[in-house]
Amino acid sequence: MTHHLGARDFQSIREAWSRSWLRIVTDRHEAWAVMPVEEGITEGGYLLPDPIHVVTAYNPDCKPHTEAENQRRHQEMDDWIHDHDLPLWEGTGFASDGGWSEEGFALVGLSRLEALAVGRRWDQSAIWEWNAEALLTLDCDGSNETSYGWVRAPLPCRPPFLPGGLIPPCQ
Image (cartoon, rainbow, N blue to C red; front, side, top):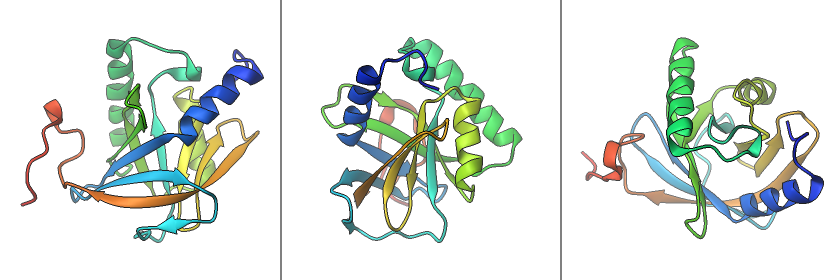
């Protein structure tokens, strides 16, 4: 929900999202960078039959929290995802200038409504949806969506959320 933010503040957040990118790491250690680009462009191939929804527990309601609090919430979300037997992929968002990142999860096989419910459960203002046609930000209250094109590029393979950020060679 965005009731605490003014329209101008939320617009600046949307603009920041348009300049961000997603790191998605699958349960098979395949890693991709997915970047928003001009609407209508799709490059690099979409490899799944279902959309991927990227959801985080970081910074609920777009309010900054400490790293410790964000990590605590992330662990709670990890436990919740395991309890609900959802696929556990990494879906981390990054600012293109390196100014921020938010660890999250890439959920495959959920409907848009189910994914939005997960976002609301974790007090998020919006989530990402990546599909064959577009990369979108979806407001969790259903009030708005922003559509982009996308470019997918391979990253060095590694397990999701590898401690220390080290990237081992593929095995």
